Length: 201
Image (cartoon, rainbow, N blue to C red; front, side, top):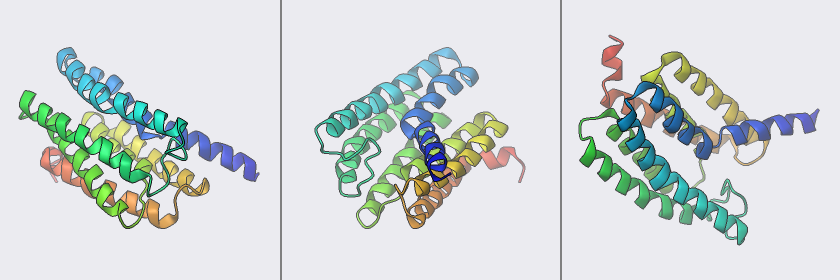
């Protein structure tokens, strides 16, 4: 029974890895709800300028032993991960505001960058679950395009939280930090985009 639980947790953790879920959103969902040129530009910015370099970096450092695993679960090892990804995200944020200054996409990238910067600061003292915080943020992004799909992603984030604890990649406290950061940044992003105004609440 315990082995089955671990297998399920591993499957959920892999499916819910931000390196899979966020590019999936960018490549699939955006093309469904945005015009082709805009979706293509945004996909190139996010996938080409952030995720592909990040995946290559994590693969190389996992292979040479710098990172213990592809999740970079060690808090000390994560320092170099943040040092690599934050400059990329800042550059993409600047480009997005230059090319689409009034778009929700630019705000989304900005708040994602803020989330990662805050996670980096917290990582100086304790580790948080990026799996959870980034997928909660992703659920907010999806919600702006499709409410039901966004709720489904949010609920799946709960399963991801469970999987990270079950696999002992994070403690309950670290997952709770991830939930809090994800919710705070997500709510701030939705407020900045005027999402709640559209709901008339």
